[in-house]
Image (tube, rainbow, N blue to C red):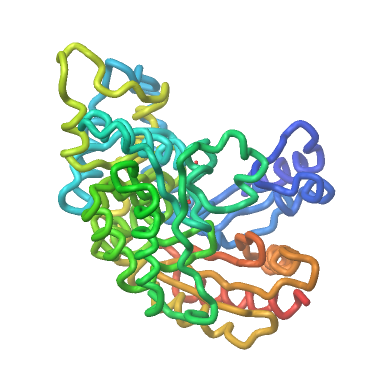
Amino acid sequence: MKNESTVLQRASTIKTEAYWMPFTHNRYLKKNPKSRILARAEGAYYTTVEGRRLFDCLSGLWCCPLGHGHPKIAEAVARQVRELDYSPAFQMGHPKIFSLAERIVELAPAGMGQVFFANSGSEAVDTALKIAVAYHRIKGEAARTRLIGRERGYHGVGLGGISVGGIAPNRKMFAPLLLQGVDHLPHTYNAAEMAFSRGQPKWGAHLAGELERLVAPHDASTIAAVIVEPMQGSGGVIVPPAGYLERLRAICDKYGILLIFDEVITGFGRLGEPFGAQRFGVTPDMITFAKIVTNGVIPMGGVIVKPAIHDAFMTGPETSVELFHGYTYSGHPVAAAAAHAALDAIREEGAFKRARDLEPVLEQAAHSLKGEPGVSDIRNIGLAAAVELEPIPAKPGLRALKVFERGLEEGMLFRFTGDTIAMAPPFISTRAEIETMIEKLRVAIRAAR
Ligand SMILES: Cc1ncc(COP(=O)(O)O)c(C=O)c1O
């Protein structure tokens, strides 16, 4: 509290012109920025520069479920900066990154073997796509270059990620830069069949069969990989229909197509298991991760691969580089220290179990919003839920913006995209906090007409 007055004083002097904010309505926000500028965070709460406390309804951007300012992560980061602040990523290593890779493989579903590190989800996705194409080439199937994503999928903002992604605004401005030879599966959302489902909808497994339809005109011998989020997070918490992922796995196996799960959101506990793969009982060939691996404290991402994929590259002279790919900050020591501390905290605090225990609390509370004005759907799985609102006629997105702004007044930092409100509260939330979050959302929805 000691620096409260400094923070408020600083708020009045913030100049907003120079910062071009990502995925933000810059002009609108900058008209009244102060309610949107965060000064501090502790546990499950942020404090704005105006001194308003906000419950962190989306765990940052899905990345901080262990709470902010976690003392063990903070200490580990500080210690690492003093001990080894940077280590060249190429041709050199440091102990913590080897042991981190081992820990991540242990948490991953059985059958995964190696980890390639990046610094974000976007980099992780582009890495996985490159590995997929290169893998087939090494195996003598150089024609397997086609990539298949899914409508409404979000795989970050790299050129690979937006190509396989399926959200139009993220793609249309950059059309000439999109990769050639990409197709999309249909998304699995169908309001008529699944509105107000709790957990996995029963309808929709057959949509995985659309992969067969994409194989037919192209021939399987041209297809490298299919990439899907086990649960579509940024697309609005779209939960996979029961049996869908199993069927996708079976079709990929039938045609020798690699299956990539983008677990940037679902990795490290959001669905109550280490990965969505375990939650849904389907093991892909590669898993991309980021976000929770460091509790969002230091950027880190990566790709977990099956040994068969890794081993395919381990040929040729031992003195030659096997994969011409990597980032200056791949396996950064400070990120590695943060990740170790985050994984320690996950274990010591029983974080996956906490997420599992809170799942019915969130489900029950969220679905109590059914019947509120303009609520057209509510979806949930793990510690994630979305409330879909009917757009105000001719003003798409405005209703959710109003809910978001009223939420701020009510002490809640909701996430809105389009007319969907998404929630993924911290694993450290109490039952009462989750119930309060939903009651405040009710107030905001009623006000947003
Ligand atoms: C499934 C998925 N993949 C990739 C990304 C991109 O991650 P980043 O923003 O760290 O690049 C995200 C981000 O939300 C995501 O949800």
